[in-house]
Amino acid sequence: MDKNDISLLIVSAEKTEDPAEKLNLYIQISEQLKNNYPDRALEYALKANEMALKRKDDPYRLKALILMADIYRATTEYKTSLELSMEAKELAIHLDDLTLLAEAHRVLGGIYIDLGDYKQASDHLFECLMLSETTGDKPAIARALNNIGYLYFEQQNNDKALDYYIRALAVARENNDTFGISRGLNNVAAIHFELNRNDSAENYIREAARINIRIGQRLWEGINYLNLGEIKVEQRRYDDALTYYLMGVDIFIEVKSMTRLATVYLNLSDFYLKTGHVEKSREYAEKAFEIGQSHKLKKAVMNAAEQLHGLYLSEKDLDKAYHYGMIQYQMKDSLGLEESMIKLTKLELQYEFEKKNQQNQLIQQRKDFLVIILIISLILIISLILLLLARQKIKARDVLLAKQKLQDEVDYKNKELTLNVMNLIKKNEIISGISNRLLKIEYEVVPEGTKDSIIKIAHDLQKSTDEEIWEEFELRFKQVNGEFYDRLIKQFPELSPSELKLCAFLRLNLSSKEISKMTGQQITSLEIARHRLRKKLGISNTQTNLITFLTQI
Image (tube, rainbow, N blue to C red; front, side, top):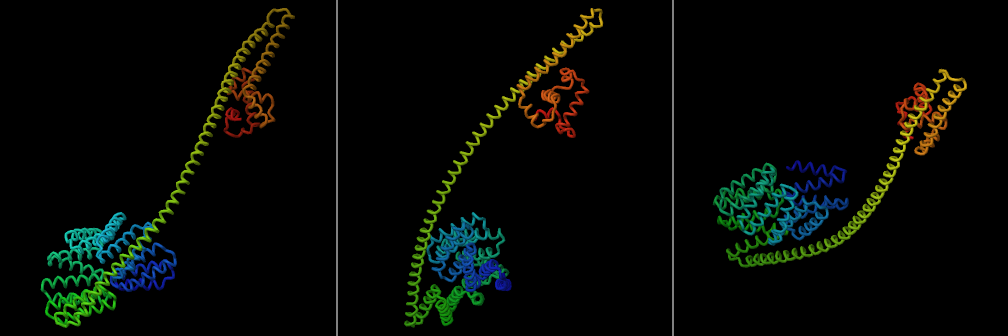
């Protein structure tokens, strides 16, 4: 992102009234300014942190903490950087944000590399790599691999360093991460330079520089020129070396990178010493010393004081040599004390973190215990409900079985009743046949008194048979289907006795022909009776089956 794009972000942040949008823009601005303009980047990171605290927005506060920690580390404010990194780590764990937890470990690893604590650095950087691989964050994986490579580089293990740098470069290329590619190229070049492969180192650096020029990474462009200057010095191409060093100076002044500016001034001091320009060498050493003092860069002060001590000693200016020698040792002691203070701060922060972690674990254990109690209670309640449901199901099944048994009994009795009715019909047919035969005798030559007796006997037989059939039928029907009669009369009290009799026959699913045989009625009369019955039952204008309707009462 170039200056114009950053300016647009700044204007947008000033104009917007939306606090959430403003907070997001502050984070973006700080990210873009971090490498080239750390002072301004810190200003926006602090604004973001303050706003996030007011809004109680922990995710954005976590981003702000990591940005501030990164910037303070770049400006060698290690104690502040460590405190912020530890706070960021704790907050990332609380938020379960693995991506930013990896970033917190990356910053912590960088701090311990700078302090020379390679064991601690290794722990944090490999944790960073593992987390980045878990989240699948390719740029973060490339950064972690580069940082591990730098860890080995600092320990002068060039083979391991080169292996990690090449892996980082491959990941960056695969992900088309231009900044990651330029950084990987620069790092691979550094190893080639250490192995005296100056030509290949120069090729890598130039490719990195072209990328950084294209994407506007001025700080890293300056670092590329610094590295090219060192290569040209080794090749004894001093004019080219001086050109690259001065190009680096211009960029570091532009981006206000005082740490890098002090470094290039010391390189220029060595350059002029090698080329026999002692005064120029002293001039740049003094410039590096002044930058170190004014910006509290203790390492720069120590290295510049060491250079000036040697220069004044070679000129036999013992007073100044002694003066800078004392400053050198003071800075060395101060740095040692600062490292001890940082380690003490780290232990204190670690203690507080572990204490808080134990408290959180205790709270979590209590929560887990309550959850377990709740789960057990739920299991018991569910078990009780299931037991009750099972009992209810068994009870319902028993009721259903009893109902089914009763229905089976009713069906059986209905069948039995139907058979009895059919037997009665048969009997009625036999008796009717006898009666008809007796009636035929009246036309034969028989004494008149006998004829009257025969006719009377025939009528008595017919009458007694009809009454017997109906009485027998009604008695048995009520024994089996008494509730049917009660419900039918209750729902349809206007039904006549003959209609009730017809309903009973239909309930037994008897056909009109069978009913005709039992009652002696004509089938046509029965159909008319059925039609009237449908009207009284309220189903005359429907498709409802009459027998089905009666069986459901």
